[in-house]
Structure formats: structure tokens, C-alpha cells
Image: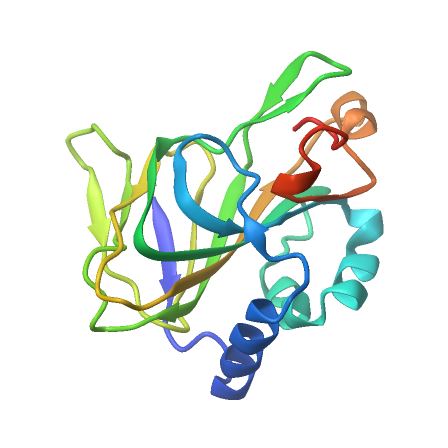
Amino acid sequence: MYKKISAAFSEDYIQSAERRFLESPYLGKSPLGAEFIKTKGFSIVFRRSSLSRVMEQFQFLRVFLEEVVFKSCNAFYVNPLLLSDDSRVDAHVDCRLLPAEDLRIVPNLVSILYVKADPEMIGGELVLNVGHEDELTLKLQSNDLIHFVGDLVHKVTPVQGGVNRICFVCEQYNLPAEALDAFPEYALLRDKDLAPRVSL
């Protein structure tokens, strides 16, 4: 169902990634769906051909992407995400709409780096396979990296305790040619840009 790697990156990288994400001019209300309650962040949507561009523009994601991107995947939806008091993510499956093809796509794999998840945080657990007999609740820590299959229903329990929960999420897709043609070469999505943005 999932694979977890503890102490996945150097502490220097984790501290630098946290600082640079929080300083990002793109950080604002999350552009993700209604399941994302009181969350902040932004989204980067791109094909493999734009991977180097993304790593150059978002230096704090470079080491993360170099590690997690699977060779078999050709399209990506990356969400740096901040949760704080009263933030939560309700049960959902990561699913994107390609309007040109009227096609909904589900990632092959979801990879998440926990940049900051303090032990004193109340809540903030990742729950996988929600609603099934083998539902699993994970209390993850800073510098944990987790991969899970993309069609799992999952959620994040409400965060309390006056601390931030910061994750970098990478949805990874292996799309056939016609779907890949409909996937943006590169798009930056922010909540304030919802009207003109590419629908996904």
C-alpha cells in the first residue's frame, strides 16, 4: 500500500527547503479542491520535458524531485502544502481533469516529503485507504518520505498545537500519448489565478 523512508534527506536540505518555501512569493491560499480546508500552497503542473525548468525556478524542490521522480512517469502535479491550526484535508483520491480530452486521470504514484511535522503537533495524521477494513493511520515525522499508490482514498486529520505541517507532494503519472498531449507542458497554479488558469 505504501513505502516509507525515514531521514530521507540531509537536515541541511530539510531546513533550507522549509525556509525557502515559506519565503516563496507564490505561497497563498491553496488552489486545490474543496477537500483542502484552510491550507496554503500552490501547484506546479508539468511534463517531464519541463522538469529541469521546474527545478531551476523552484530550487527548494530540486533535491526532492531528483530523488522521487520515477523514470517511467511523464507528467507531474507538484503541491508544496502548508497546514496549521484547524487545517485538514478531507477524504479524496488525487484526480485531475484534462478538459481537452474530457478525461479524468489518476496518478500512478503519490510521493510526499514531510518537510516539517513536529512531534508536539496534535493531529495531522495521514490516513490511507479511508473507509476500508485495512484503513491505516500514519503519524509521520519531519524528513519522512512516503510513496503510495495513486488510487488510494486518503485524508489528513485536523492539525492542532500551534505548529506548521509542511509537505511537498508529487503526483506522478504515466500517460498515453493522447492524454500527455492534453497535459500542460508547464503551468503554475495559484488560488488568486483561478479564473485564467488551466483547469486540471
